Image (tube, rainbow, N blue to C red; front, side, top):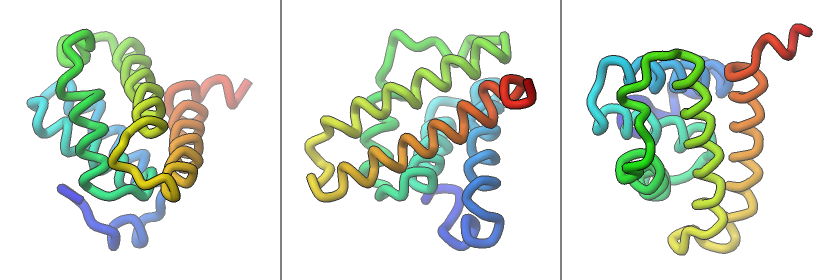
Length: 133
């Protein structure tokens, strides 16, 4: 991991680590460059999916760094930015399903981990008011 290590996850717990990484990505879009944001996404994917840094970096390169159609760096509306971050996370699933660098035996586990991560972030962060309703 770039900014964290496995000990951080064990110490504070998966849910707190993932939440902190998500918040760090959000704040990064307001104050950091694309390389820093990419490292934060990579940390989130490594911890959230349990994938290697190499796989996380490939996913981030494809969905965060090279995506010219995404304009997250200029978004100022917090809800719009969170929704766009959710779209990035959704698009990462398609890459997980097709990325040649992922061994077939690991693909199912990574897709299941992605579903857990996305559910946690969408239910807990992107749509927290709906849980209370």
